[in-house]
Length: 384
Image (cartoon, rainbow, N blue to C red; front, side):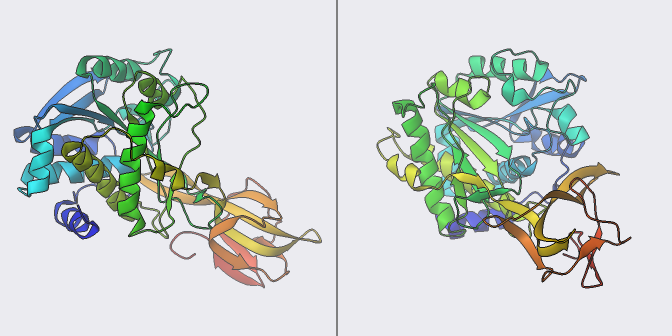
């Protein structure tokens, strides 16, 4: 499928009721009800607080793909893309879509961690990271996913996540808008035949994305951790692909990234439906640069602080306030930040920088307004 066709699909079938960053069970239940006549939808378990965990079955083909989103409750971009895809699969008669539906059975868990999603936190209600619980299976959500994996017996797994704004693609100075990983399946990170299949799929998705966001696709470090779900499933010889929805310029709502995640998943599904994947086309995977932690949301360069000229690196702290995610500017690092990038940068030109009340700026401080050259500079997203 071409980028133009993928973009047209998303423009036509984007789910308008889901937007911005806060996506919880209450937002998707009406959509599950809407799609009940199109797909088989079941409750496969419950969270710590008793909220239902749903699975949506799409298609009737022999190739089985399992995907799950919001294992971390505050990583919602992939969930938005899932429901864009559901609209597409429910309504489109395009030959490529029908090929997917006829060749694949896709099982989608749209929110694995509904308690974390409701609170807009990474962990579950017991303060456990579900992506470090693949061996202990100490949490009900972990048991739900593992039991479904064992029963469904997928041919492929898509592990859908979101990543912070701090990541760049290598030393490029470009944000990692979408990142992938074919997780390791042993301590030596061996490039097994199984991983090669995942790598081949990633290489195909990368080709589509590079035509639209050149240089903004990365791969994660593949250090092996059997406590992670992707590594565990890969170790069971099921080709597993990690998707990470990252930052696109000025897109803190992650609506542009949502489009690229939609395209990536759809490209992967079509490739599985239309190809005999052997892993022999995996080498292009290694051309994708590795993610690096090179970004701050804001860098104030050349600030005079206590007689020294330093840089101020700030990150937006995400907080759920009255049902909406707000971004709170917070001082992360005061140092010489040469080699780091800001999504937005200001130059103090070696003048004193202070808080609005003239107090000195310190690491950890939440600051909405700074004084630069005696001018008030608002740091919230509406102004910066």
